[in-house]
Length: 334
Image: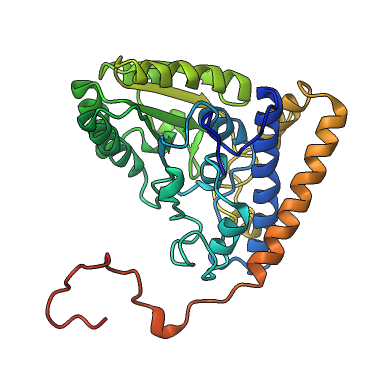
């Protein structure tokens, strides 16, 4: 369930509490998923979002239920922040028919169109043209809706992202491009991969571009609100570079092979700026304890729900492969 203000329904809670709650939900969910992937319960592993929670929470706090997001391979946080049920999200990761996509999407392709989640995506940068296309459709129909594309710094040289920048600026589309710059494209430092400045690159296309502290949910929420309102007012597309950091490896597999491309001091410096801890200082201690207990119980319930689900049967393998009513070409067995 979501509110008109976007994100999980929070009643009359303050924004500080709402942001903390969303971030705690993402953190707890990701920590459980990481543990389950290391035991093999989640097959294929995950790309942990731990450390970057302020970006998803802050951006989605500025959106309504009718707005849409296009996510990335590191997308659990975006999907949860937009309001997806953690039980069904975890069931999706376990590949059961109770999942958001009936076990067919998994970690990198979770979607919930009813909530405006137009899918996580395993193709780097692929969400940018999807969001731009959605924004174009909103503009053509005169709808008061905004699209958001999340992507990492590793996508900033992808042609499809730059093409989306160009068309969005040319047609003044209501789309916000959110670059989660966590410093690394897998193991390649951004300084060795990207020429120039990420903000200036976007500004060169005519986007209203700015950088924001991606470790501060309040700062992200403020910047996102301004960008979204610009879009709603017909001011054209915007770009946010959220400077953030992932506390764990690019993929859970790194926990097993211990890749060494970041030194302990660097990781420690960023962990000292833990966005969840920062946000907790803006909420009274009793509320923090209550939210923590509530989220732990919610994730416990999600784990139980997901583990009780069933895997798709072999004879169901082709179900949902084609849209209902679509006539397949001759020779295709359904």
